[in-house]
Amino acid sequence: MPDVRTSVRSPGVLLSVAVLLFVLLAALVPELFTSQDPISGVPAERLSGPSAAHLFGTDQTGRDLFARVVHGAALSLQATVLAVLVSLVAGAALGVLAGFLGGWVDSLVMRVVDVLQAIPAILLSLALVTALGFGTTNVAIAVGVSNLAAFARLMRAEVLRVKTGVFVEAARAAGVRWTGVLGRHVLPNATGPVLALATVTFGTAVLEVSALSFLGFGATPPAPEWGALVAGGRSFLATAWWLTTFPGVTVAAVVLAANRLAQAFERGGR
Image 1 (cartoon, rainbow, N blue to C red):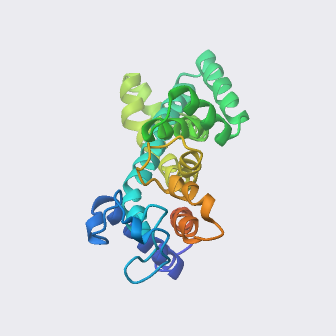
Image 2 (tube, rainbow, N blue to C red; image 1 turned 120 degrees about the horizontal axis):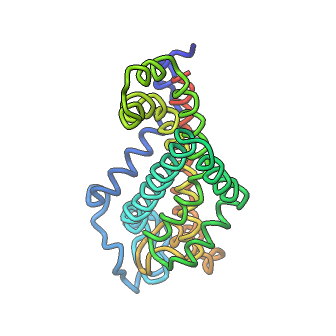
C-alpha cells in the first residue's frame, strides 16, 4: 500500500497545492495580488508588453492583463465549483435511485445515463448552454449536466455493492425502515469514491468552462473570464502574444494542478 504521507509530500503535489491556493486566494481576495483596475484601462498604454509595471502586459484598451487574470479567477472558479456540484448532486441522486430502488426505475435512469454518455461532453454542453442562454451560471449548469453520467454510474455501483452487505441485511432484519437503511448505512459507505471523482472532475470542468467562455457563452464583456481573455487576444497573436499566452497558461496550470492532486488522493487512498 502506498505511503500517503510520501505521496502528499512529493514536489509535484506541493507545487499543485501552491498553484491552487494561489488561485483560490486570487478568487477570494484579488487585492492581495494587484491594485490595478481590471475593467478600466489607459489607452496610451494599450498593447504594452510584459514589464515591471504590468507583469502580463496590457490589452488593446490599455487594461492590465495580470489584474484581469487575477480578478477572472473568481468568475472561472465560481462556474467550475457550481458545475462540479451540479454533477455531484444530480448524478449521485440518480445513482441512488437506480441502485437502491432497482427494477424499472433502475432501467429508466440508466437508459437516460446511457444517452448522456453517448453524446460528447463539450457537444452536450454547447447544446444546453444554447438552450439556457448566455451567462456564467448557465455555463456551469451545462457543464455540470454534461458530466453527471459518470457520477450516476459510480454511485449506482457503490449503492449496489453496499446494500448487499451483511450490516445492511442485519438492519433490515431488525426492522429499520428503508429511509434509515439508506441514510445510516448505504449513503455513508457509498459516497467516498463519488467524492474522489469530484476532485478528478474539477480539472475537466475548468477546461470545459473556459472552452465555453472562449466561444462567447460566458459572462458579458468586459467581465474577465479566463476563456474570454484567451479569445480576446486571438486578433493580436502576431503583435501581442501575451494576450492569449498568459491566460492560457493560467488555465493549463490550474487543470494540471487539479489533476495531479486528484491522482495523489487516488493513490493515497488505495
